[in-house]
Length: 178
Image (tube, rainbow, N blue to C red):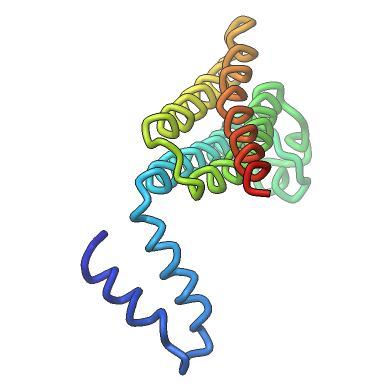
């Protein structure tokens, strides 16, 4: 970690004078976790997944504009009239891809964070995160471009394998220490 970041975090961690002290202490704890290479790997892939979610949202918005298919009447009025207050199959496909991504990425974010704090083997954790990321990207591309079955289903199943593995490892870790 950058030296000045560490110094700043350590100097603010003991600040009893500030009402923001607890927030600085939380940041200090987060920065200390960045020394954990598994957590750093998790942050890298999680950030890519969040960017993928933003990308899907932008694609959906752009499709709405291009296809002139707006859910809200006020948006339709702004872009040509109430006749554009309608559904479009391509926009709906993009919305479903985005919803599916959210439904799968949010649990991964939770599981991956807990898993990272257990300090597993870096290589194994990296493979888990990489497989999930690549499979979710393939799933989204297959959804958006309507690839033939079973491409999307296989990508979904492949992405679930590391999630189930991580969940089992978390539960077994907890059960052993209980």
